[in-house]
Image (cartoon, rainbow, N blue to C red):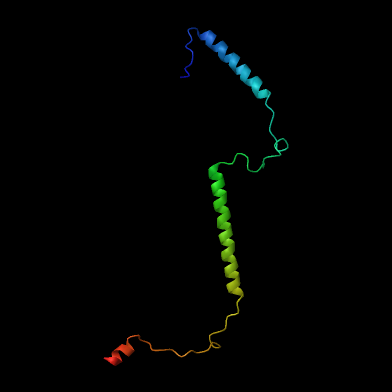
Length: 106
């Protein structure tokens, strides 16, 4: 296990913490930022996307696609020329009851 070293002297502990902090600050100052120019082989948009963000983006794109299909269907239906009720042909209706022929046979 990675246990901390027990310190007998508090001043020694503070001095070592100060030394590690200064090393850490020096390392932070030496860090150079990674830019898209240095990473031309990678797609800069897809860097560091979490799985949930990708799933949410896929779901939103699927919803957008489905909505577009529904809007196209609605638009197609609205553009159809519908005949008014008076101009529609009256079709002769058959028997109103499906039991009528059976009852006549009885």
